[in-house]
Length: 611
Image (cartoon, rainbow, N blue to C red; front, side, top):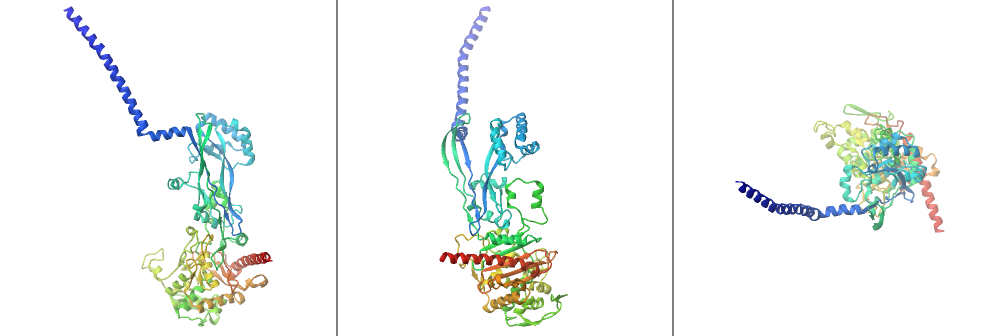
C-alpha cells in the first residue's frame, strides 16, 4: 500500500514538471500575441493617427495671420486700416492654483490692473483656446515695457502681438464702411473649411461684409522642429501670409465730412450725394451714428447696451431705411398722370382748399388753394390738391408702374444689399393680400389710400438712397443708375447698370422745368440766397407726416448743375417738424457748396496740369 502511494506521488511530480514548460510557453505566446496585436493596431490600423501625434510633439506650427486690406476714399485717403495691439495672456496648464494666485498679484502690481479684473478674465468660459486665456487686450506701450523688464519672473504669462481694425475717422461713414467682429463658434464650423481660424474677424456690415473675400487675405505660417524641451531646432518651411486687397471707394472724404457735420444736430436723418452720370456715391451719412473702433476694443455691458439696445438705434442706417417721402414723391405722380395720357403735360387743374375723397376731406396745405395751375407751378408751390386729382384720376396701377420705372419698391443694386430696405409702394394688389398685417380680402384698397399715395403719405415708404436714384433720372436725361460705393473694374454706364427709363421726353422735361421753378421762385428759393457760390440747382422740398406716429419728416431732393446734372443730393431730417425748406434744404445747400468748391478746385488743378 505504501509502495503504491509513493508511485502515485512520483507520477504527479513528473506530470507537474512536464506541464511547467508548456504553461510558460503558452503564457509567452499569449504575451507576444497581445503585444503583436497592439503593435498591429497602433502601427497599421491607427498608424497615421499616432504618426501625426508623434510629429506634433516634434513639429510646431506657428500660424501667421494676414493683414486685412484697407478701405480708401476716391482720392486714396485711408478710411480703414489695421493697427498692432499687445495683449496679455497666460497658459493655465503651466500653473498650479497657488502659482496663479502669486502670478495674478504680481501682474496686478506690475501693470496697475485690479486683481478682480484679472480673475474675471481668467474665469471666462469663452477663452481663445483651452491652452491660452487672454487677460488684457490693447496694452499700453508702458505696460508692455514693464512686462518685458520682468518677463523672466512671470512664468506662464506672455505678451501676444495682434492686428485689429482701425478707423482713423471713427464714426465717419460708419454705416457704409461697416465693421468686423470675431467669428462665433457656430460660424467657425462652416468657415473653417474656407481657411478661417477661430481667432479670425469677419466683416459684419457695409463694405467690410460685402467685400470680405477680397479684404481678408490668406493665412501663412511656419513649421518648426523642436526638441523635448520645446527648444526650436530648425525651420522646416515658411509660407508667407497673403495680404488682403485694398478697396478704393467712391466716397469723397471732404464731402462725407460735410454730410456728417450737417446731420450732427439732428435727432435722426440721412444725407446721400451721388453722381447721376455713373451712380458713384460721393457721400452717404446717417444720424445717429457710432464709433467703428468700438468693435476693436474691450467694452463694458453699459457701452454694449448704449449701442445695441438704445432706443435711438445708432446701428440703423437711415440712408437705407424707408420713410414717408411727402412732396418729394410728387414727380412720380406726375409721371403717372402724363404717361397714362389722362393728365397731359399741358393739363391745368383747379386747386382748392379741400377735396373730399371717401370719408375724408384732403386739404391744400395753405388752406386756400392756388387756382388753376399746371404741373410746373404745382411743383413750384407744392400743391397737394393738384396731385390728389392726378393720382386719384390715374389710379394705383399707373402710380405703381411709374414708381417701378424709377426704381422704387425694389433694392437699388448697391453692394451692401444686406443692409437695405426695399421700401413700399402701396397698391390694390398689396391691399388685397392684407397689407402685410391683415387678413387677405379684408383690407381692400380705398380712394383715401389713393389720395394719400399721390403725395407720398401713409402707403408709400422710400429710402433716401432710392429717392436719390430716382432724382438722378431727372438729372441725367432719363437713365436709371445703379448706386455703388466701389467702382472696381465695372462699366457703370453700360446697359446693365445704366438703363433708359421708358418715359416720354415731354414728361421728363416738364418735371425738370417744374423742379427748377421750385428753387427759383417756389418753396426751395432758400438754396439761392447766395447764388454766386452755386451753379443752377433744381429740386423739391418735402414735409411728410410720419405714418408710424412721430413728428413730421423734412426732405429735400435736388441736383446741380441744372443743365448738365453732375451731382444729386438728398437730405432727410427724421421727425424734425418745421418743413423741408427749413430743415432739409439748408443741409443740402451745405453739401452742394462743398461739392462745388471741390469741383472747382479739381478744375483748377487740372488746368494747372495742362500749363
